[in-house]
Image 1 (cartoon, rainbow, N blue to C red):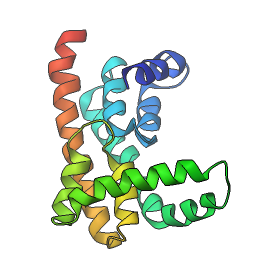
Image 2 (spheres, one colour):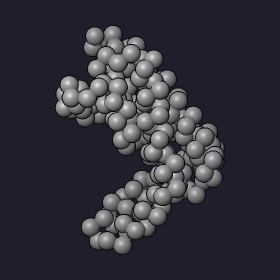
Image 3 (cartoon, one colour):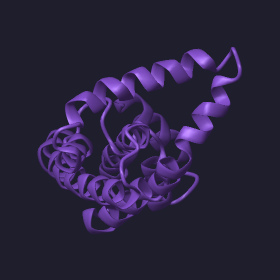
Image 4 (cartoon, rainbow, N blue to C red):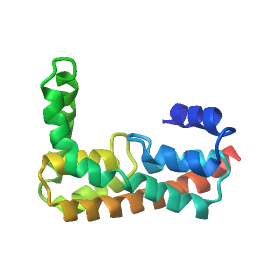
Length: 166
């Protein structure tokens, strides 16, 4: 993730505002709020400006993922070139969903909220979609998870890591 964030910082950091790059990176799968906050820290965006940008950027695509992901995957499954990707995504989501089945809401919230590789709003939405979780319940759990991840990453990016790199 560090390489991708560094690439965004060097490629776009001088061309558009640091706040706009932060928001854009937060929209992207895998990077999400974690990458957005690391980038914001690198570009010296004030934490109080960065937090709403990364939260909004991370949450904005989630309703669309929840509503349309299964339809998109079913469409992609029709083509031989994209079928392996769909099967890989579904297998990965099913592996993640096994641990979420019992405490669906809290499991999804913690899955999204604890910043580990392969977790986050996008993956949480994919898992919730494949589990056919109630939209409102999934949206609330993912949103609260994004808030938790933002808090944890704020401490890491602007606190501990900020002390190391500034």
